[in-house]
Image 1 (cartoon, rainbow, N blue to C red):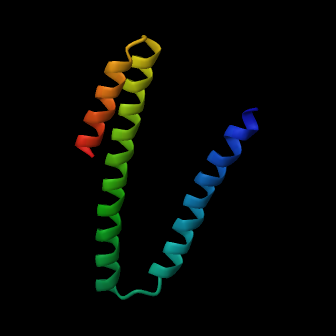
Image 2 (image 1 turned 180 degrees about the vertical axis):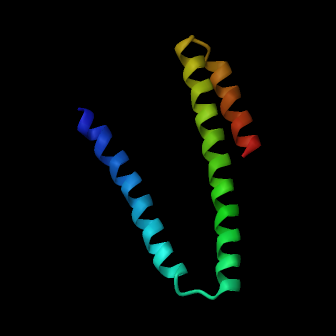
Length: 86
């Protein structure tokens, strides 16, 4: 039961580490200017991913609380607000 939840999460985290290793190997062959542009764009992308993941987590918590409290209308409203913010 727990392995069914653990294995996909572990593979997801491992793929992030593998991806970063591949990015590092690629970046080692860039010039200084190319590396600066690559690093800046990668950080901007990372920030946008963190913001969207945080929003998703917050909306998921609010939806879970509303559904657990027997308030499906509040859950729907949380979903709509989440979509509008995204």
